[in-house]
Picture 1: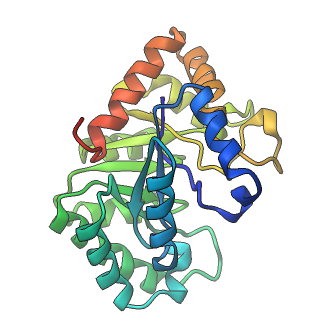
Picture 2: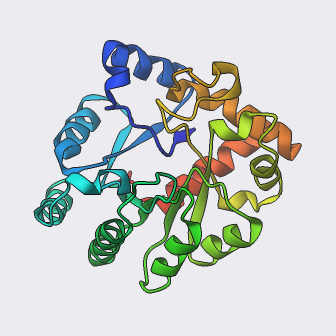
Length: 255
């Protein structure tokens, strides 16, 4: 398995990061994708991915961090991508959930990072919360390598539009909640070739961790089992395909 989205550098994991990583490896993970969220943690993500086996970095400026970003951070992103092997540009995108959002500033940093991804021929890891149509509109302006729509929670029509553009859709802890009827329906019926697994650790905990629980990549095995049950298929088959999907869409080093 590959956790296609895990903020392993997050401060919530500071007390026991070694143990979190060890549990993930013991649970059968082959890889953990660690997206950056701002220039200030590019170095931390790079160092962490050098230190921990199976961790792969992505670099980007998250829409929730653009208010403290500067245009010079885009230069730093280019320099980091020139220096470091990255699986994607991310986590980038738009967020309409927070009422105080700065939409114009979000769009500026999003589109500039799409240009950088195109320049480096890299896929993107997208944050699309309450902003799927706006994200799709911007993506259609650029010919990108594709990527992942992280924590997908849209309609089937929106899912199909991402798939047409070469994107995979990320499913994780939200799918495990019995009340998440729309997400579970999508997870059960979308083409399996379009799905990747993720945790978004330490966020979006699965149902068995509770609303206030901390998520971690070791939970991916149980998340995979839930998805396999929803689809009525063997877990091993599902894990093999979703892992292949992640490897196909992101820029993993050639073995």
